[in-house]
Image 1: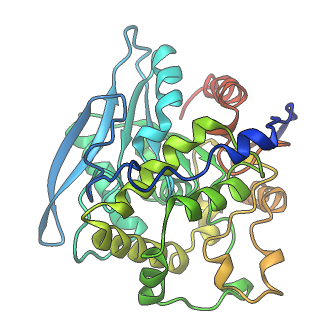
Image 2 (image 1 turned 45 degrees about the horizontal axis):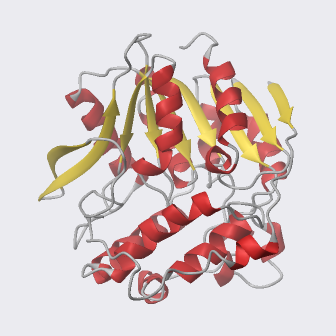
Length: 341
């Protein structure tokens, strides 16, 4: 077991700047389609068509091939409030080091199909991802998962250990069982009603307090508007419904009990200021402080991993790859140099 601590300089921002980044004017704020039509990732987006659960679906993805290939592929799995495009800086850094980079939008998210009816499971999303990679002729890859993508990456590694060279978990949720700690059951209809109220303001406030440790930079606003734009668009009901189904998947399918079965090298990257716990606002007030303690969750996770390395970012929150990309990428690239499985 290896533990590396990265202490970095806090990012400072003036009160004037924070105040100036309010929600976009209602008349000019972007509105996107249910499949994020109109939002540009800055990369060519490909379309993998396949049949699943009696429906034809489109799984959109970014596939960046480097000018000078090193023979390795990295797959980037986004989080619940993120998309393939959110990995933009990481894609460029990895491709610059010779990696082929695949970044899919999972079914139900971003530019991919949002079905009216779909049984969401991490197993299903892992199968979809594996099928995509097979269609591209990729039989082995390093899997990087952030947030909810971390839960999916763990499930992928458990289901396809032979196809997973290395596993990188960036502030993954699912390192604890929220229900076992006292969070009540939340119905899909309850999630749906809450999701219908989503706005740029609610997204921004949540991300500032959770993802960025109370700090805010103008660069973050692009990702707020990316999400909020779908809730302003004509397909907002379908977006909210799929989001509700996905929240139910996250809360009812814990992976924490299977961490000791991961056989490949695992890098756990954690912002110590992270306090993410899906549905924490539904939990009793006495239970909330017990949820999302990432420094403690990291220690417990490391004790379970067969081949684990921990990198902690002392002043960062839930999204270190966005909050301090230079520090994040330097740490990631250093670890990736170790021999793969």
